[in-house]
Length: 240
Image (cartoon, rainbow, N blue to C red):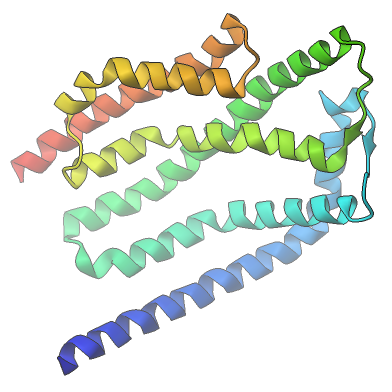
């Protein structure tokens, strides 16, 4: 019992130590975020679709709120690989050598997929959605008056879900490795997965078939990549 308690205390101490490292890194990145937040906001203001509109502050806190959000999101993005590494280091004692190598390899791939999803969402999906909603407002003879908070909330509600969906292949690989998924099961639920991806696409894009397909096709491709990776992991796991 005492040995178990000491083990628990050791684990809590390890968590505390790694949390301190993560929070310290985020604090440093936050300071950098405060410095570059204003140039980033100017960049967003100077490019489409924001370049042709006027941002407004509807409350005294709007400018400060968005400024802080940009600084925090930047610090979170910059420290994400560092955070993932410490999560891996904490779990490492419970993994075998092969699992340690595999988990460590997931980190750069996870960051790369998130960056790819973020780029796709910002440069493709967001402009399409913004153009559609602005055009719809115009058809109703409504005057667009954009608050800076509402603009960024609208943008993030599109960017974050798509960026996370791009992590699908890695999630499939992980679930296959811990035997919660297998290639056969993924193939059986393929039609339902396609329907779910089409449904998600209709929620975050304008309701026209072209916009839906622009989002749905990459998600379907990512699902099929996940199936291929699942087959690879499944074979490799069963050989060991």
